[in-house]
Image (cartoon, rainbow, N blue to C red; front, side, top):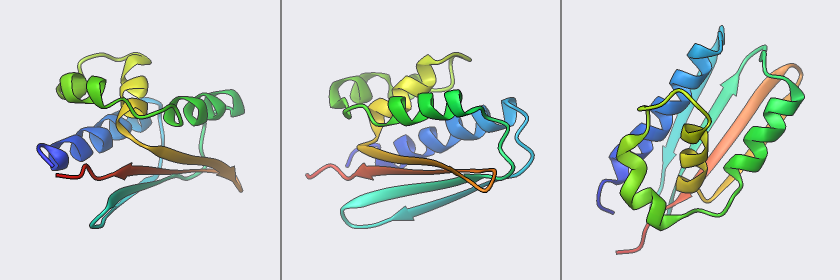
Length: 116
């Protein structure tokens, strides 16, 4: 589990930057660490994101985790202000639930811990 805490921190940092840059007024993060997985739960209250952008998040975050990319590029998260950062997050998580309910955006990102 080399660098696991730093990788989780990079994911949260990148998402925090994204939400704040996009004029989010209230966002909540919860990180739940377990023996076999880490779950990052995010609520963007009164979200400004369009349905099209939310669909883009859903698609990007639910691509297959790419261990090779993660191992070499996770340290570069935050270096760009473009869509590549969202793609990198998608490569670092195993699955995501992305929903818009009652005007709020709910994200649940699940990262299975590496077996040592």
